[in-house]
Amino acid sequence: MKILHFSDLHVVPAGQRLFGLDPVLQLRKLIEHACAHHGDADLCVVTGDLTHQGEALAYAALKEELAALPMPTQLLVGNHDHRERFLHYFPEQGTDPHGFIQSYRDTADYRLVFMDTLSPGSPEGEYCAWRLQWLEQVLQSSMLPVLLFSHHPVMDMQFPSMDWIKLREHAAVMQLITSTQKVAYMFAGHVHRPAAGVWQGVPFATVAGTSHQHHFHSTQTGAAETSLEPAGYGVIHALTHTISVHFQLAQSYPRFIYEGPPLRLRD
Image (cartoon, rainbow, N blue to C red; front, side, top):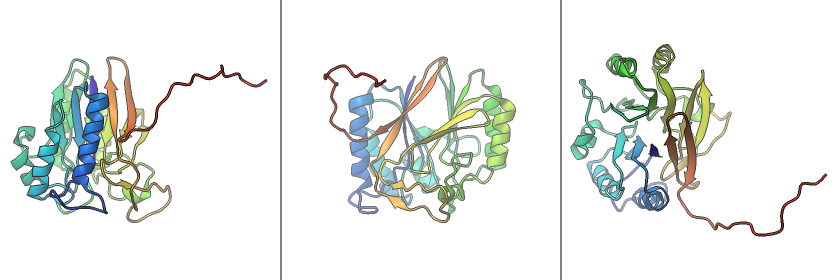
C-alpha cells in the first residue's frame, strides 16, 4: 500500500495570504507534484491543521483543492481546526460515538487508525477519557499491526519550541501503545518538519507543512520561529513486512544520470 502523508495546510479563504504566502496556491502546487510523481498512491492522509483559523470559507477552498487528488483522502483535525465547520464540508469523514473525528480502516496488511487530538482554543493536543477508551478498543480488537496517525506527536521530538504544545495526555496514550503492542508505526504533523525516530521500539515520522515551516533549533524554547523553507510531504510504502517513509520536497529540481568515467576509490 502506498500512502501520501500531507500535514499542516493552514488554508485560508481564497484570495487571502498567510506569512506572505498563499496557502491555497501552495497546496495546489503540492497536489500537482504528488499527482505527477505519486498518482498511483492508494490513499492520502492529511494529519491536521487543515485551515489556519477554522473559517467556513477556508474549508470550502480546501474541499475544492482536494478534489484534484485521484485517490481517497482521510482528513484529521489539528489545533487550528474547527470540528463543526469541518464536518459541514466533510461529513463523509465521520465521527466516533462521542462525536470526535476519529476512525479506522483495515487493509490487507495493516489497520490504519486516525486520532482526533483537537482541544478547542488550545495549541496543545488533548486526548480525553472517551477518546482513549475508543483507541483502546480499536487497538485491542485489531488482528493486524496498526499504523497510527495523529496531528500532535505523542512523544517528545527533542524540539523544545514545539514539544511544549504536544499532546497533554501523551503518557496515557503511550502506555496504551506499549501495553497493547499493536502499533507498528506512528505518523504525525504539527511540527512542520520532516523528522523520524524510534520511541521504545516504535518508529515514528513527521512531515513538513504544505505551506510554511518551523525552524528547527534543539535548545530554543518558547514559540517556534516560522520559516519559509520549501513545502513537502511524505510517501509511505506499507508492505507486508516492510514500512518505508520518503520525504518529498514539493518542487522539481534538475535530474541527470551520471555518464562520466567510472569512479574509483583512492588507496
